[in-house]
Amino acid sequence: MNATQKKLDHSIFDADIHGQAMNFQYLKRIMAWVKPHALLVCTSILLVVLASLLAVFLPVIITRVAIDTIILDTPDALMPDFGMNSVNEWLMHLTGFEGIVTVCILYGVTTIACHGLYHLHRVTFAKTVLFALRDMRLDLFSHMEHRPSSFYDKVAVGRVMTRITNDVQALFELLMGVGMLIGEFVPFFLALALMLTIDVELTGYLLLSIPIFGVITYFFRLATRKVYRQIRNTVSQLNQNLQENLSGMQVVQLSNREERNLQVYSDINEKNSKQEVHAIQLETGYGAFMDNMVNLALAVIIWVGGSAVLSDAITLGSVILFTQFIDMFIRPIRVLGMQYNILFRAMASAERIFQALDWHEQIREPKTPVRLPGRVKGKLEFKNLTFGYDDNQPVLKDVSFNVKPGEKLAIVGPTGSGKSTLIRLLGRFYDFSDDRIFLDGHDLNSIHSTEVRRRIGVVMQDFHIFSGSILENIVLGNQSITRAAAISAAKSVNAHEFIEALPDGYDTELVERGQNLSQGQRQLLAFARVLASDPEILILDEATASIDTETEQLIQEALEHLMQGRTSILIAHRLQTIETADRVLVLKDGKVKELGTHQELMALRGVYYTLTQLQFQDVSS
Image (cartoon, rainbow, N blue to C red; front, side, top):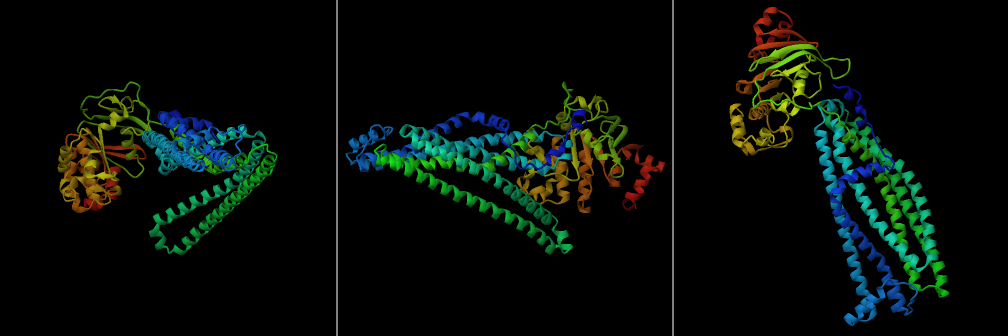
């Protein structure tokens, strides 16, 4: 472990982040994923500008054309109609219809065009967001795939999953909210520009109401922010309590804790319900207050505008036009208030995402890696290796031994002696000092980790199965392994017979973690996977444990075929497996205690002899 990684604080992945202030640096970084889709963004903005322009013209058609010009026949040349009267006259000339009919046609066509453009804007903007977050999710997944095992030793996988799933989804809501705000504020500014050209005084009265609405919204969201935080906390507690009880259901039922657990869950549920009700009360109160304020603004416009109409300073249609624009003024503020909590949740999600993306902990790779030949001999050497996962707590202490090409070495020792740690270091899953482990005379740290792992096949007791078919679990995406080669490997390790007996043979889909296979079948499948990749070095980490006696003979035959011609390291608890090894290495307290053949170590009557008496006495008898 290098000095940089020792100082890393993994606890930040466990810290809860409920809400952060607006961070424009995060927004700037998010835009990096949006930038490749700039054409879609520009198209969406153009569509929303056109749609907003039509949305502003709709009340103009009703008030300045229908009311002032056609119904009241009091057109005012000083009051702009933005060309809508000319368009209506052109329609009258084109169709021969009366003005009231053509104005309805004009309004209908404009409405359809307006909503059609809004729809295209929303779809285009949604595509942009989805494409950007798709790319972000891929980058995040790829980044986390390359974090070393030492990272996942200290960080819960669930925390990482939350960043890739829930937090990215929160950014989707944020960006879609930005699109919604664009759709609201563009007509706001267009309407403002049009109103200023009609009547500055009336526009000023409307503008006076905006700070009032803004202040009300600000204090309202301060109140709801605390409530929504409590809601998130109680929902989190509900999920945690539910997961604990369902995953430990057997213990719950054996200890008769059903009623007690129900009471605990009910108490948390009640807290959540109270906070939800409080949030609804605040939301409905805010909505009612805003509605009343809108009505009050409407009354002011009618009062001031009506007086102007009576004095012939403004037309009736122009006053009605201002009442139509009140909604365009207030709605953006309402939408902004609705997006407030989403915004702060998304800022917290953005912080968690960038925490993960900025986490550059990785295995130290050589600047100029050694190039290995097509096939290595498989000679391994450990020299004075000392290693610990944490500072000042070494797991391995001055370990030295070697493994000859093609040799089978068994490693035994009590739990915690460092057996599995040796295997992890050999696979370069952790950093260790240079010139401590050698492969064919090359320092393992001078070889790229992917090249090392390509030469090593590992079969563990807890064999991981991916979603997909039997064949896909053997090949694992290695294009150099053909279907015929995979089947040949399965035949060699006695897996072919049970695979062919499955409903779809090698194309049989496996359920989660391969639960539709027995333990022995999963083990044989693991052997087939390793044999198909044809590694020069084989590691069996307690691979024959928990095997039923019926499958044991098949496993032993598969092992013999698998180890043939390969350097093999066996970590096993079965005496039968250990006796097949050429030599046995005995580890205790992280140190090499004994090394020799089974017969030699038994004759020593030392640590190995004691282990065989304690662990293998039933087997040996």
